[in-house]
Length: 353
Ligand code: 1CP
Image 1 (tube, rainbow, N blue to C red):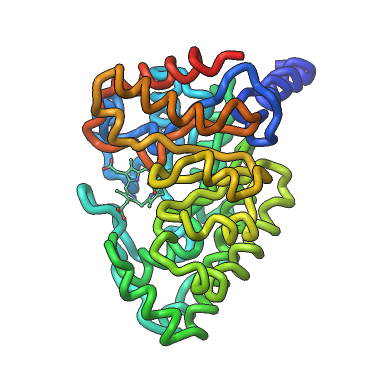
Image 2 (cartoon, helix red, strand yellow; image 1 turned 90 degrees about the vertical axis):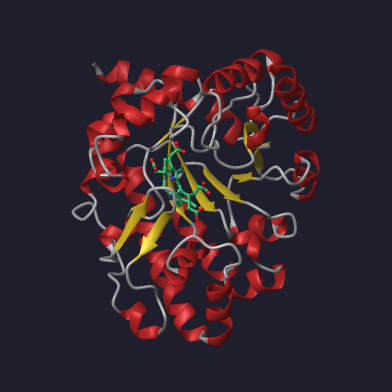
C-alpha cells in the first residue's frame, strides 16, 4: 500500500461514526458496538475457543485477530474491541492467576498486605506482553473501522487481586483501604503505573480509542471514591490522554458517582442500564460524549420489544452529537445471535440522519 493510500485509510477511520461521536461531532447515524461483542453466545466463538484455554487464546495474535473480527463481520458494528481480558497485565506483573470457565479470574495468592504489593513488577513492557502489540498491528491491517483497546481501572483490578475471585459485595477490598491505607496507596500506584504503560503500548500499536473498565466501582460511596480513588484515576487519565486517542470511562452502578468519574477523566462516559441515559448525560453537563445503555437482558425478548427499548435509548440521547449506542454492560451468555444483528441494523436505520 502506498503512503497516500495508507493516509486515506487512516483518514476514513478518523472520520468513522464511532470516532466522530467520541469527539462529539455530528455523524450520519448513531454508531453502535457492544461490550463483550465477541463471546460465548456466538457459535463461531465457541468453535475457536474450544481449542484453547481463555488465557492461551488471549496470547495468540492470529486467534485474537480472528475472534475480534467475528462480531464485526457478523453484525456490522461500528467498532472492534481487542479480544483480551482486563487481567492480562497480571501476566507482565508476575501475578499467578487463571481464568476459570464459568467463574472468571482467580488469583493464586490474593493480596493481603504491603509485603504482597511489594512483590509485583511495577511496569509492563512490550517484551513481556508482545502479543498485545502483535494482535493490534494484525487487526489494524484487517480493519476498516476503529479498534478499541482497553484496560481495567485500578479499583476493578484491585477487587480481583484482593478478593482473589469474582465477588458480590467487595467486602475484603472495602476493608483493605480503610484498614491498610498505606498498602492501598502502594497498590493503587502500582496498578496506575502498569495501566499507563499498558494503555500507552496499545495506543502506540495503533488502537484508535481506549476504554477503561471500572466495572465494579459502583460498590463505593462517592466520598470513598473521592478519597481513595479519585487522585489515582486523575493521574491515570492525565497520563494516557497524552496519546491523543479518545478515552472511554465505563462503570456500572455509577448513578451517584458520575460527577466524580467526569472529574477523573474521559472523553466518553459509559453508563449502565440502571439510570436513564438522558438524566446521566444532563448530570454530566453534556461535557463528555456518552455511551450506553440498553439493558443486555432486552436482547432475549422479541423484536418488537427490542425495537421499543432501543427507541427509548435513542430518544434519551435526543439526537445530540456524541452518543455511542451500546448495552449497559456486556452481552449475556445465551443471547440469541440474530437479535444482536437485529439491534445493530435497527439502531443504524432508526438513527439515520
Ligand atoms: O470463553 C470464556 O469462557 C471466557 C469468558 C471471558 C471472555 C469472553 C472472560 C473471562 N473474558 C472475556 C473477554 C473479555 N473480557 C473482553 C472481550 C472483548 C469484547 O468485549 O468482545 C473484555 C472487554 C473483557 C474485560 C473484562 N474482563 C471485564 C470488564 C468488562 C465487564 O464485563 O465488566 C471484567 C470485569 C473481566 C473479568 C472477567 N473475565 C472473564 C470473566 C467471566 C470475567 C468477569 C468475572 C466476574 O463476574 O467478576
